Length: 442
Image (cartoon, rainbow, N blue to C red; front, side, top):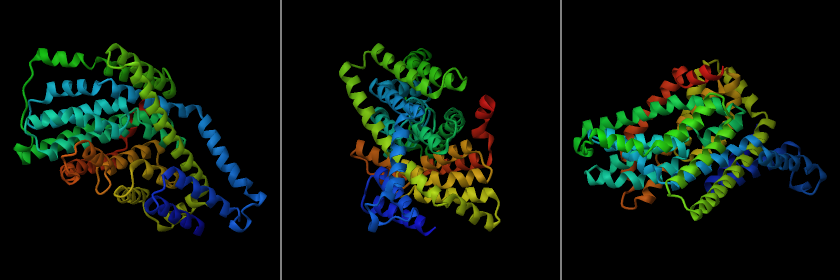
C-alpha cells in the first residue's frame, strides 16, 4: 500500500508542481512503481532484473498502437475536424435560431441546441466551444444579450461534446474498462438529450429572473424555417448513418468511424467549403491530436498495470466492505471525489487518473460499468465549467478576449446546477442511461 501512496504522491507532484505532461508522468510512475514492486531500486539500475518493467512498458506501447479497435479514435477525430472546417456549425445555429430565436432567451437556447448537434458530429467539447463562440456570440450581442448568459450557454453547450456519441472520451473509457463501445454510445444518447433540455431550462430561469439578459430575437416565417433546415441535411444524414448503423448493428464503431470520416469529406467537397490544402491541414491536426491521445492512453495503461499489480483495487474493496455501508453510498463518495478533482484537473487527466482505480471496485460492488461510464463522463462535463479550472471557460476567454473568465464563471452557475440535477437523475434512475443498451444489445 505504501508503494501505491508514494506513486500517487509523486504523480501529483509531477503533474501539478513540475507541470509534466500527464502521459509521461503516468508512464514514469507506472514504470518505476512496477519496478519497486519487483524489489528493484537505483542501486541495481543496470541489473538484468529490470527486464520485467521494461517488458511491461514495451508491450503496452506495441499492443496499444496495434489495437485495431483504437483506430476509431483518429477516425472520429478526423470526422470532427472535417465537419469543423466545413462550416456546418453556422447552418446548425441558423436552423436552431429559426425555431427558437423569437422567444426570450431564444438565442441562448438556440446556441445550446446547436452545440448539441455540432458535438454529436464533432465529439470534442473544446472544439465545440471554440467554434460556436465565433458563430453564436455576434448575433447574441446584436440583440443585447448579457455577456454572462451568452458565453455561459456556449461553455455549457460545449460540454455535451464528450457525452453525445460519437465521443472520444467514451472510447477511451471503454478501452480502460474493456466495456462495449457501442453500448457506451447507446447509453450516452438519452443523458445527452436530457442535458440539452435542462440547459434550455437553465436559460429560461435566467431570463425569468432578468428578462433584459436575453431579449427575444426576430420571428422567422415558415418558409424561412424550412430553408434553414435544408442547410443541415448533411449533418442529419451523416449522424443518422453513423449512429444508426452502430445502434442497429449494421457495422462496428470502427467501421462507422471510417464511414463518418469519408462522409464528412464528401459533404465538405460537395459544399465547396473544403480545399485540398484544408484536407492536408485537417490530416495534420488529426495526426497531432491522435498522437497526443495515444500517448496519454499508453501512459494510463502502464499506470493501471502498476496499481493493479500493487493490489489497490482489492485493498479498496476490503476497506469499503469493512465500512458496512450501502453500495450507493460508495458511488456518491466517488462522485464527491470527482467533483473536487474537477476543480483542479483537466477532464481527460481526471478520467485517466481515476478510472483505473475505481472501476474494479465499482464492478465488484455489482454496478454496470457502462452505466458507471456515463456517470463518470457527466461528472467530467461538470468539471469543464467548474472553477477554477473549467477548460471550456478558459477556451472561451481566449477566443473572446474582451470577456473575462470571471464573467463566464458567473454565468455558468445555473448550468452546472442543472448538471448536478442530471447527475442525480442518472445515478438514481438507472434506466435513463441503460434503456437503449438493454433494448438494443441485451
